[in-house]
Image (cartoon, rainbow, N blue to C red):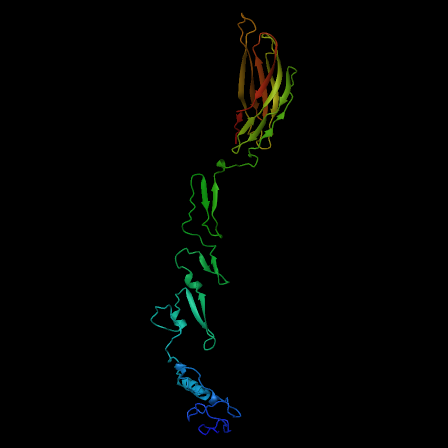
Amino acid sequence: MSCNCHIDPCNTPCSDTCINCTPDNPCYQDCGCLNPTTWECITLPGILSPIGVTNNMNGLQVLQSISATIDALTITPPAPGSDVYAKVSVTDTTADYLNDKLLVTNLLTKTVINPGTNEKIRFSVNLVNMISADPDNLLEIGTDSKFRVIASSTPADIVVTAGTGVTVTGSGPAADPFVVSINPSISVVRSCFDSIWRNMTLAASGSASVVYVSGNPQYRYRYDGTVEFRGSVTYTVSFGTYSSGTRKFTVPMGSIPTTCLTAGEQTGTADLKGINYIDAMQASADQIVQQYGYIIRKNAQNYFLEFQSSFTNATSKTIVVNFEGVVFHPNI
């Protein structure tokens, strides 16, 4: 039988009984229509209340409900001067443009780049405002727009004061530098006053009774010009009897040069050191003290040794002449 109650969506009469056929729902089972599954023949879409879709709508009605929902949406742009784009924190009570939310002091500058298009904010350091105006400030802006130290300025808290034996000239800047001079008498006046130890130049004794064995004394010029000695030299000395003239020998020992200290600065004769030794008496009834010794003597740059004894009989002794503690002060 035909279905006469539907609005013909298929343009073909049905040849079977209609199912749920009403004027509001002209849907039917596949009863011979050429296209029985059009939008108007789809049922049970479900319930979507936010967009007004109910479960008894067909496909066309669902689309109509979606369209009506979209048309009802209202997008209201912010009014001119009203900013809704930036807040500092969740507790910020007032929204404003980003440029107005960012504040700078006089040490920074703020510039909007590309105004009216893809805008950006640039921050720059204001170097000029970072230079203190205090007196004696040593900073300034260089030609490369960076900080530099003013080398020609002298801080007021640097004071060079002259004192006893010290003179000061100059005001301090590079054009007039400080020059500190001291009394030459308290400085090393000669490069040879270097405290380096040097060997003395030894000389032959000139006496067959005084024979050199070993050793070489050393000397050095202290930083004030004083000549100091160290080391030792050993001789074998053959003394004569008590009544002979060979109880004493004065022989040359060596010298120091006159290149650092002149002969005039070393002038003068002085006994620099003397040592005496006492031996046991040669006989119980001997009343003569058995002793011998040496003296280190200088005459200008030349040094001599004097050996002497009081032996009763002729005696040979090996004598070590010790130069430790010998010091000479030149006339400088």
